[in-house]
Amino acid sequence: MAVSIRELDEFGRRQLATATFEVSPRESALLLAHVLGLTESQILSRDREGVDRGSADRFHSLIRRRLTGEPVAYLIGQKEFYGRSFAVDSRVLIPRPETEHLIEEVLALDLPPRPRVLDLGTGSGCLAITLALELNARAVGVDVSSAALAVAAANIRRHRTGDRVRLVAADLAAGLDLQPFDLVVSNPPYIGGDEAESLSQEVSRFEPATALFAPRSSDAMIARLFDELDELQAGVPLVIEMGYLHGERLDNLLAGGRFTLCNTKRDYAGVERIAVVEQRRANTSR
Image (spheres, rainbow, N blue to C red):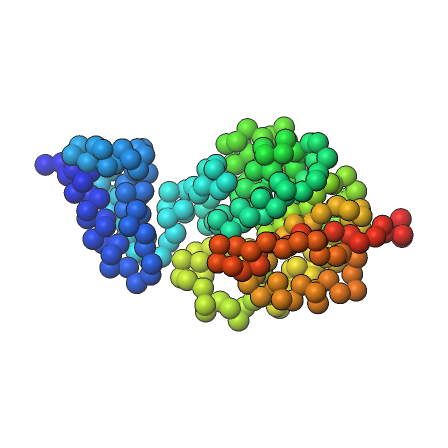
């Protein structure tokens, strides 16, 4: 006898209620919708329909994986960011709501028409692709990870932005010609190794460590950005996401360099999360 959608959803909810970490009540329906090719609302409206054995087994498998802490976004292979769905898996970070503040800050800038955007540490490509679409921009997404670039390439195809977004394999800005760009954005690794124990198992066990953890100290990659972007043209904004302590350290990070702080934006938790900086003067070495 076939099991119903309602019975499977109730089973999933009971199982997920035993998790040792925080689980949203929606997750069972989201996983079931993914297996059945339905929307979450259809799961609720068609709850008496039967489900074949193969689909039920796939749902049970996803519930077991979720109970190990594997994020829902990886289980269903996608995550929404700024109103669009992006493919994600364990090769890239899962886009966070707080990163959408970076997009908001960029959209508030006075940029030229069809700006040229450089996204350093592009990961899934969500920043480069979103800005290409929101600003009618031409974007270059850079990542040191060939695995991450493969995911970004899939998202470029998904959003049909191949004519506006190209990908480059590089370690931050090393070896790049910075002169053509009107804007640089980055969500670099900014978690210190000593902070690893404070992370949830969903993050620490499943998301790529190289995209999470900065080498040596949590400030290391942001300091590298300021150093490697020294040749950026005066007045070109650099918009970066940072950790919860970096707002307090920003003056020290900027001291003695060519960049000056223009603005910061707090996230939903009140943490200074986004910083906008610019070259304070033209580079006289050119």
